[in-house]
Image 1 (cartoon, rainbow, N blue to C red):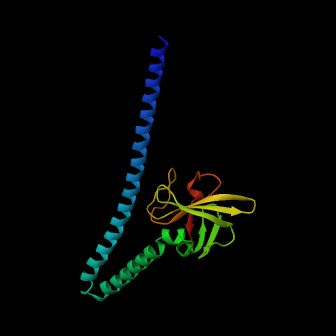
Image 2: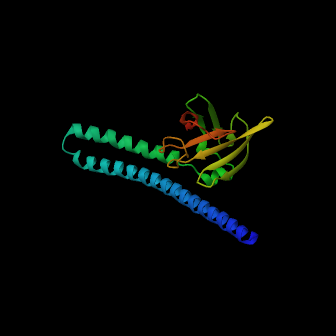
Image 3: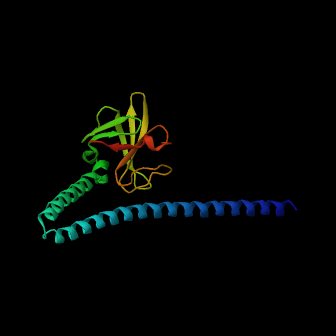
Length: 190
């Protein structure tokens, strides 16, 4: 009688474990799908902008006013493309200790700032460990005095779980705990 009850408990426990594994797998793959959709949406937007500029260039030869407008649009598109290229984060370089793609000041909605030069953080501690996160983030372990904190870099298009942020821009989060509001997300300001 006791053996039968023990087997029943084992079967119930095994069923629960299988259900948890299946649900976790579904959530993980759904998160990956959302990341891929965000990247595809950003790519489609850039593609649409390029197509619009090209068609405007074709019609601009009719009048001088159209020509001026087209020139301004071409300059704007070139600036956007340059910004997109300069926004590209070089993960491999960062993993090798070259922080050039992060150089500048990063500020959040609370007014807190981090400044990077090509060697790392300027005055907010020393980056001791750099690694790639599970979802495409770049993870830093930062030592500041007797304590430390973590920092995560989110390349454009990558979703920050639980927070609304501008997917068209590179972002970073930092602290001893995960951010709880969009104001805690850092964006590059220069």
